[in-house]
Amino acid sequence: MKQFLYLLTLISLSFSSCSISPKPIAYGSDGCHFCSMTIVDKQHAAEFVTKKGRSYKFDASECMLNYLKGIDKESVALFLVNDYDAPGEFIDATKATYLISNNIPSPMGAFLTAFETLEAAENVKSINKGELFTWKLLQERFK
Image 1 (cartoon, rainbow, N blue to C red):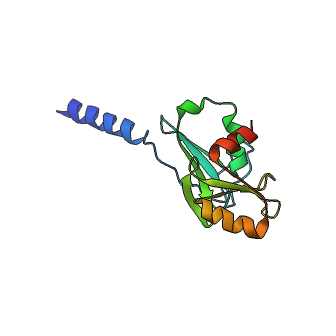
Image 2: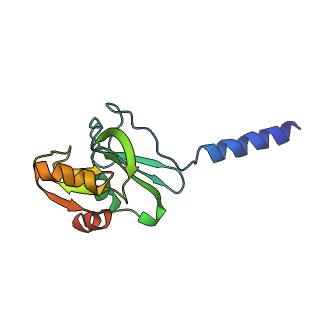
Image 3: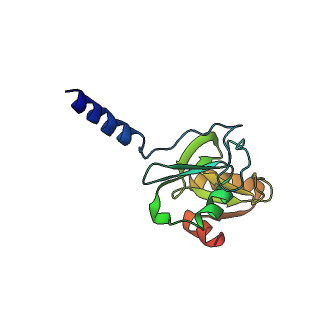
């Protein structure tokens, strides 16, 4: 019976440690996996989670995009970015609308900002100017 409980505990721990879900960013202490800067900006941070459950955190969407150049994107389960209008809240990066505007600085100087909806991005663009991108177009730009 003890061996059965031990085996059951071991199996449940292995499954719980590999869950595919976002890991919270500890703003002010977590470091960016690309540039090693401390992540402090809640409007521009990003994260991806592999199919094995490993989380990679970034201080800016442009850092995540640059890091993705060197990995197999098929190994990634979730691409996440912070919503500019809801600081600290992740949205699906593949469905977000992006604005590059010289009037909205991002941590690494690409002036790249993510929005949950096209409408939100267009509203901010009408004030700050710039160019809108989808996830696909953004990846092409950062090749």
